[in-house]
Length: 220
Length: 143
Length: 136
View 1: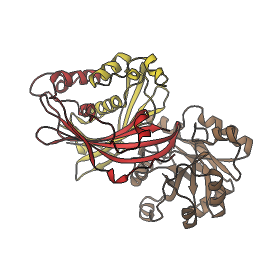
View 2: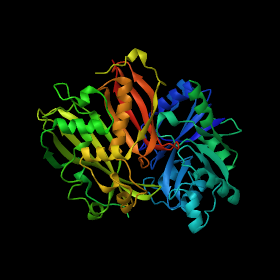
View 3: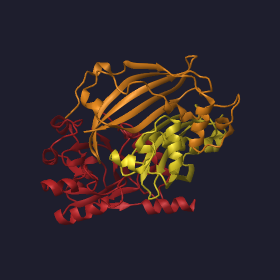
């Protein structure tokens, strides 16, 4: 099963993509981007009232609600957000303590996943060099669709050194870029509980569809 | 450090200015610089109109309301992007007015560190009161 | 007046890509035409004095180029709205790639929503945005 674990909808301040528009594109481009679901990781917010069941039924994909928060070690995706996690952290705070986020989100039933670790300032690599590693990280975003040249390469070193599993996400802020990078899971997943379980166990791997998409675009 | 300010100023117009009439030369120079070749943007005459993005030339006398904290006013700002709703086209002779209001202020972190984003909304009208454009300008101030 | 017919537009249709060499002289002309002849838009030395890697193009100029792309597709005056985020500095004396794609059509309003973006010659997305376009 393949999920794009890092997607922003128009709810994120710098995205302009309605969720349904993402699904329409994935429907059209199924052959080159075989995505079974999306995880909406909105910036600095989480709305527990979001209900995707209608869209899931109409488009036959899994749609999951998550968040991207900002910490003193960079940006982190929070999956499995529940009332306890919402009460524990102010998602709008751009200076959350990363160690607390990683440890407490795990304790409260979710998983905290550092994203774009190779990116300057807001990625784990730079902070690890300066301050040392965090305890409890199990997986990092090995491939991010918005990375600049060289940023993802730094992550491979990080993963090897600390034994982290890797996942992938498009980090799409526009409809056109969804699903170009994603995560493959061995298990069949029906909801966030399963996704969290597999990520916690590190049973995931990043997948890259950019070359396939480019070839399809050239082919017309 | 998070920016503290009186959020009741959001939405309140803090500046209004009326500019000199638009000239043919200004319209044509702008279009030339963009590499336009369309006659309607380049040839003087009754059909000449300004390129739609000509509206970004307009700004108020002040970037920010006086009531925003001083640290922002002394920092260099960068253009982080704009949202423009286009209205009626601008023609030579139009007298353009710009009303500015603070629309939003928020923080986020990025490649260059912690940033404060200030969104200033311009409502741009012509002498007939018609809306030429509404522009949300996102200004980025680095910590 | 919009020239592209609604019935001829489909979700997934692409605009361009159009490759455009952004010359320094053109950036200077744009800066002067906009009364923003600041050092960063005029020469490398002036830009470096402001902490930049070299001379840059104004973000507004990127918006102008994207409207050119869209109007070439949809007709003069077709753009109703354009929203952009400037993600990276646009350095002149390089080739930019202007791209777009139709993401949604609205039959009642006879409009289309587009993704539009500018890539550097290394494939980095420097400007991303969306546009609402009126169709004939």
